[in-house]
Amino acid sequence: MRRRTLLAGALAAPALAACDRGGGSGTAASGGRTTLSYGIWDVAQAPGMRKIIAAFEREHPDIAVEIQLTPWASYWTTLRTSMRGGTAPDVFWMNAVNIQLYASNGVLEPLKAHIAQDRTPVDRHPKALVELYAYGGEQYGLPKDFDTIGLWYNKALFDKAGIGYPDATWTWDDVRDAARELTDPSAQVYGIAAQMDRQSYFYPSIFAAGGQVLRDGRSGYADPETIDGLRYWTDMVDRGWSPPQSAMAEVTARNLFLSERVAMNHDLSAMASFMHGTPAIKDHGGVAVLPKGRRRATVIHGLANVVSAKSRNKEAAWRFVDFMARREAAEIQAAGGVTISSYAGTQDTWRASMPEFDLRVFIDMLDYAYPFPRSKNTAVWEDLEYLLLGAPFSGKGGIESAARTLARQMDRALDEERKAGG
Image 1 (tube, rainbow, N blue to C red):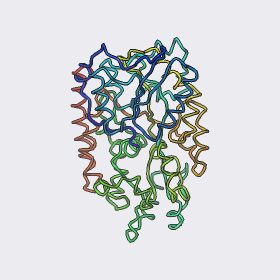
Image 2: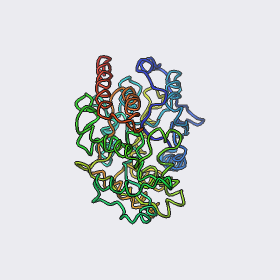
Image 3: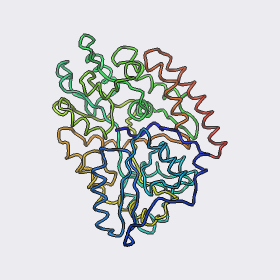
């Protein structure tokens, strides 16, 4: 389940601006029933979405909703093509990487007036998450779920090494000490994994070090605190306590953890169902809050539902988005156990679906969660992150110079964004 961070088939602003504004995707079925199309990318969430749709259709018998499931790898390019052709879904999933790009090009329906009219309970969703889907003083998306990052660990490997399990008292020093003791070259087991994944690895560590990815519209990668957050990971690669990034080109850190070749791994709350579905991890896996650096930090992200500005059935589409933002839909989603519903007070259902893990930690971290960094053309500087930080994450050193080079190139990209009207 690919979640959030990469923009497959990057969408250029001119291409979006050229979209036909006169089309629409909704159709009217026989007898006057309106049929909406709903674009999603995650097959694991499809059963839960169908249950929510069934509940919505019972409450709104004049509206039918049909899921359009497109795999993540082609979701964004398919969406761009459908917008150009006037066949975009009436309602579709949006992520933080893309929201400003889509909103700034007028292809999303503004929702603020709808929210005010129907008193949609936006305040029941995490404020930081709601703000992710606002742009230019307007609200363009309503959250459906959220995820934070936790420290997953293998109890059997900890027991073998005679080390106590991670808990809320752990600091970076505790993780380093444990990673050293847990690494066993003879068994090809590493203490921890340091993968080039922004949301799960180096964004949380940057924030925990007191640094920033974006600071007042400029890059924060040249800040000493930011470099310290990156060094937390590259030092463990250099010392052999984590496999280098080059070793994870084909096998991800998650797969290494699931196969018990890594004792600790940062990962999303959304991956709990995968952990639960792996017998060894279900039997002796655990999860704790992220360790404290200079301060406590994690990253919050979540998907939102948006309405196409080209939909022929905007009122019906809004009614569906409004329903998805309320308690009934959230409780149905939470019961599926795939992701955490963002509506306050519904998370216990998700927690109870996998009692083997202390999933409360993901909810506890909301108190110090930082929003996923984004700008109008996030994908441009995200690509630079991978390009320039890859070598230090592969044990080749030079994290300081790589971070400063990234800051210069990222600032140029942000300058171009502003010149283009960002």
